[in-house]
Length: 196
Image 1: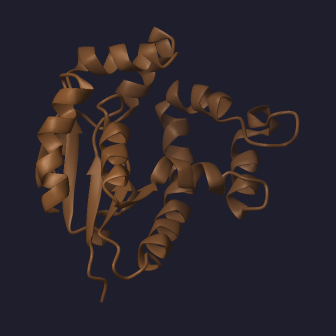
Image 2: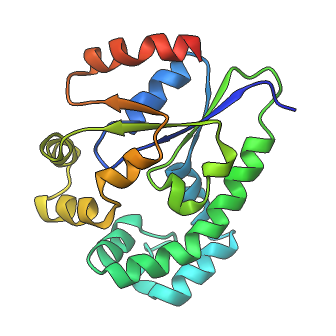
Image 3: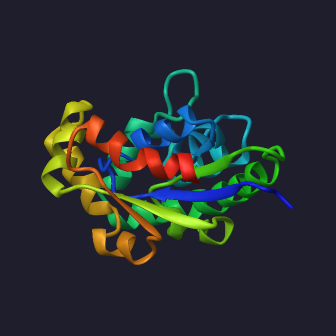
């Protein structure tokens, strides 16, 4: 049996999950970034690539045949039905790969953090020992997304496409309020990371 704790890190878009994940990684935890894993599964040599092209058409491809995540995002975040279709294709493949990676983490690893906006929806809750939810006000989240370069319309569509904040809080073992600065965030979670 592994002797490390598995933490599910989740929260709405723009809440600061990635910052918390970076702090965990800095403290020596193994971080499995679900968005990054999805990115890998979109490559041409994976079966998911074919399914996505069949479902959404060649319009989602870049010149070299790679999936253009921005084009795909623009399609699915503008249409809840298409987002549902995307999730139906992607979630099972993601779950299987995250399960594999979690199983293969070396013994002696301090903590494993699964960083996933849709932790519950993908079916990853059974893999974790506790769930950390990062929260922030809608205003703070929108400001962060705009700062990252999204247009207001794109940011709003992505925020609307995600579960409401209350859904995240229902599954939380620990809540991280991230309405302040990065320094405030570090101060708030550092003792828990050291103790975890």
